[in-house]
Image (tube, rainbow, N blue to C red; front, top):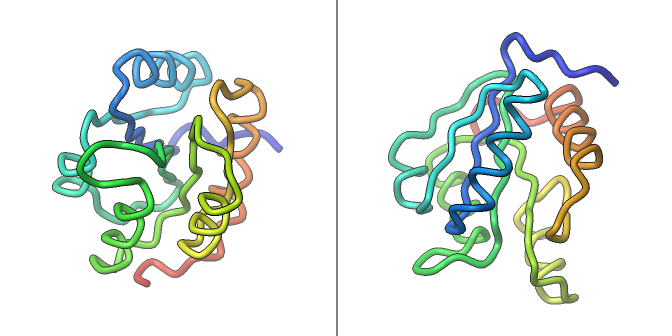
Length: 132
C-alpha cells in the first residue's frame, strides 16, 4: 500500500536521541513529515488530532511510560493510531499495549520497511474517531 506522503505526519516519542534521529531520517527518506520529542511531556503539550497522522512511541521511558502517554491522549480526546516501539518484549507489556489500543507492537531494532508498512496501514485504515 503506497504512503500518501503529502499530508502524512508521524510523531516520534522516544527518550533515546539516536533512535529519534534514526527514525526522523527514515521518515525524511520516505518523504514523510515527522516531529520528534525527547520527552512524553513535550509531546503531550503540543499534540493535537490531525488526519493522516500516527504516533511512534517507545514503551519504556522515564517518568511516563508510553502506555501512560496513550492513556493521557485518550483523556485529551486525541485518537491517533499508536505504533509501539520497544526493546521490552514480554507478555505483560504486550497485553498492556493491546489494552491501550496500540495498533502495532514492534521490537527494536525495527526493520525499516516493516515500520513504513505499519505506518501506511495504521494511517490509511485508521477507523478511529477524531475524538475518543
